[in-house]
Image 1 (spheres, rainbow, N blue to C red):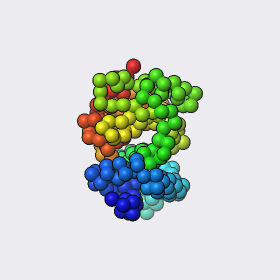
Image 2: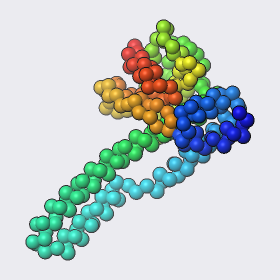
Image 3: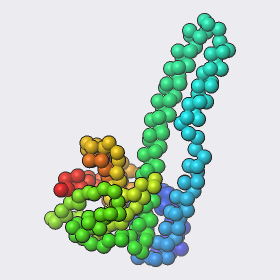
Length: 249
């Protein structure tokens, strides 16, 4: 298929709107075409710049709370004592329900935003001519490379006897927090593993697997770190790699 046809699909690929077979085919093309890979990388960088610019004008939680309080105060001044007995509890209930829904909706939106950011990093890495800064299949080479570059340490699994192989790693950033980005390969598919510090996260809490932006995700927290696994492979492969990482010593 000529590059012109692939180029027309890049925007849909970056936005996660392609079907899984099309997404896999385009990913294979990007690995062998420098021109299309550069185009994909440029689109990802533009998308991230626009997203960051949009967040500058997001109203703060304090601002929304002050608006809600002012509405309640105005309602109270315009009501008699009898109506206060009936209306104020209803208003408080309404505010609570709206606030709860807003909190849950915001938490879900923030999680989707994180997935979208990581999907962009995954796509950008696959499109890059230098996807990793330390190239090695040996975990005893990759892990020490991160020492002094990120403010935490982590363990990598032994892959002998599995279908997975380690490609290498690089330092990455999510919301200005530095972390580790590892690349694993299985059956010609690349899987990204992101590791970031999370304060007060001691117990293992697994979330997923879920699908977003045409990729499968699995994430969990363990010993103060949060792990994200991102790839276009099946959920079983994601779960297998996730278990290997959780059991690593």
